[in-house]
Image (cartoon, rainbow, N blue to C red; front, side):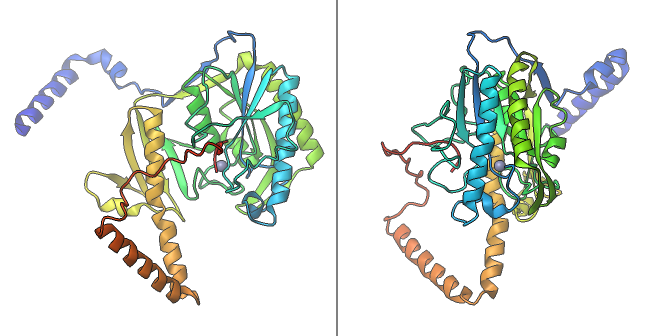
Length: 375
Ligand SMILES: [Zn+2]
C-alpha cells in the first residue's frame, strides 16, 4: 500500500513538473504568517477602550522586587503603576473615549488588583467576572470594545529587555515562525475580533519589538540596562508623554490596524533557562529540536492553549533547580525527607480511594469572589 501511494505521489509530482509550468510560482507562493488589517468604522458612536496593565514596564520601576506582591519594594511599584495607568486613562478620555475599562494582566499574587483602586481615576472601571479567566485569551465582550491600550509592558524572552520574559521566564512563544512578546499575544488575540491595540508603554527594547506596528503609539519609560536594572526617565516627562500619546491614539483610531495570524497555524515553544521541556525530545511523534517543541494548531486559541500546556512541562526546569538547591541547602535533607513522607501519605490515600489526583480541579465559585484578571 505504502509503496503504491509513494509511486502515485511521485507520478503526480513528475506530472506537475512537466505540466504546471508557469503556474508553479503561484503554487509555491508563501502564505503570509500574519495580516495587518484596517479597522472597521465605529458603528455605535461610543468609543470603548479596554486598558490592560502589566508591571515590569512601569515608569518608576527598575528592581524586579517592585513587581512582586509580598516584597517590601512592591508598594512603590504599585504606586507608580497607578500613576502610569492614570496618565493613560486621562489621555484616552481627552482623545474622545467614552468608556475605559481596566483589566489586570500581571498577577503579582496580590488578592486585589495591582492597580490601587482607591487612587485609580474614577472615570475608569476595573472589570470583574464571576469565574477565573486568562486576560490575554478569555476576552470580555469582544463586540463591545473599539480598541485596546496596554500599559507597563515588557520585552520578550531572550531579548535584552528589563525582566524580559513571555508569560513565564525562559519561554519563547513562536507562532507561524514569529517569536512574539506579550503585547503581541494580546494584539493577535484581540485581532481575531477586528480590534486593534493602539497604545503601549514599556522599555526601549519592547519599543523595538513593536516597531512594525506603525499605528501604535508607544511611550518609552526607561532604558533597559540588564534583566535586573534600567535607567529610569523623569516621571513628569514620561507621564505627560503617556497622556499625550494616549490622546493621540484615540484621535487616530480610525487609522489603526489590527493583526491576525493566518490559520491554520504552526505554534512552538522554545525554552531557555530556567524553562526546560527537553524531556519531550525522547518522545516519538513529538517534534522537538533546538530546545523547541513545534505543533500544528487549527486556531489561535488552540496555539495559545497548547503553548500554555507546554509551559507547564517546561516547569521541569525550575523543579530541577529546586532539587539542586535542596541537595546543597542546610535544611535540604530534612525537607526532602518531609516531602517523601508527604508523598507516601498521598499514595496511601490514593490507593485507598480517599483522594483522586486526576479529578478535575474544583471550580472556585464563591459568591463573594470576583475575578479581575491575572492573579
Ligand atoms: Zn507580563
